[in-house]
Image 1 (cartoon, rainbow, N blue to C red):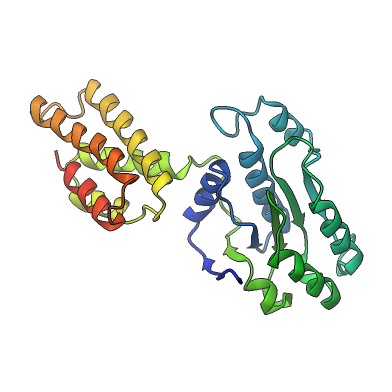
Image 2: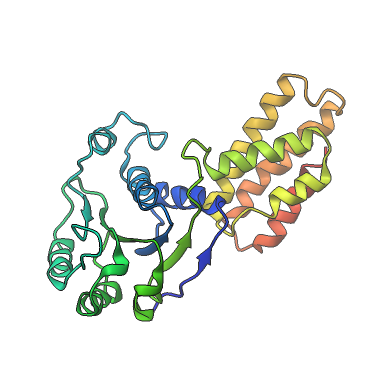
Length: 271
């Protein structure tokens, strides 16, 4: 079945992609479009690094996978280039990917195929690539890089998820769940209801990510409370609100409407 493609220009989705990679929920095929070719490749490698890292905090920079990525070589990360400006990626390149993709990864994790200048794939190469996208091997991820996806067949795009980025993003930004948790905690401490509503509206409909936000949020609020940020809040009321947020963690895994969970969080943050 063809996977519905979509386009996001919101730069916060870069952090979301990293979170998906860490959680091993990354789509089997994505198209990354950016005017800066080098930056686009850096995004793809960062996605692979977040997925392959075996450390507690990803990427840890210390595990064997992170070290290999840092040294510019990882046996499970394949970068396919057109070898020169305007040179086509030919069907032979795609046949290599097709054959290699069915071989189990060296490190026992995911395998990545990063195709640079994918807009230069020949028609024959793209038609061959469609067959891989229709029946992708397990634990294999294809990332197509391009300045513009106009050179790609609609049948390739419809089987991929498409993301367009600006080149002025920073890789030093915090993970999405941490960033949202910090902004929500600050808004709660300042009794900024508009801020609370703004940042809860940015929470993607992803229950695992939502749990990460809640866990980080509780930690942030308790840390701020110990520093006196909630000094005007009644201690009993404060603890009750914290317990209600903790109860939300239990509700996330149940069949409760996601929008209702987010609305309830809004109410809990009004200390």
